Length: 173
Image 1: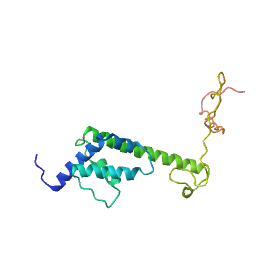
Image 2: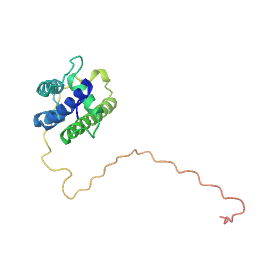
Image 3: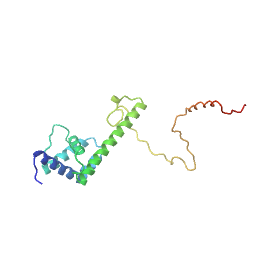
Image 4: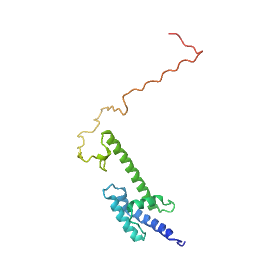
């Protein structure tokens, strides 16, 4: 099938780029990682692969973000299995990042930190990280029952009982 336009050529080259990156084990490991310079490393690897494939990348925005956006909007039918797996990895990373941010926000709210006091890892700048050694004995100890309460201690009030409808027999007390 002949390529009819520059747009079709770019689409075909992008699909080839996605397939090439999906087969690269180092790139896939980097996609799933949480390194500080993850976007920079992804961008450089995408640039290298795009030069190999011949795909033109505009450097006006984040290279990795534009690649992820384009991959997310690509038709799944046209993607190779490696590119589909890569797309799923990016989606999983995005959902995990969103979950972590939500958890960090909830923890910060509970301990009364404002969002501006917290760096991107969810820790205040002025509080050092302390690692605690594991317990010397397993928890809970053998043959012990641990009672944990995961609900509030406030008891719910029972709904008032319904008054008997007229004409029903009520024994006198």
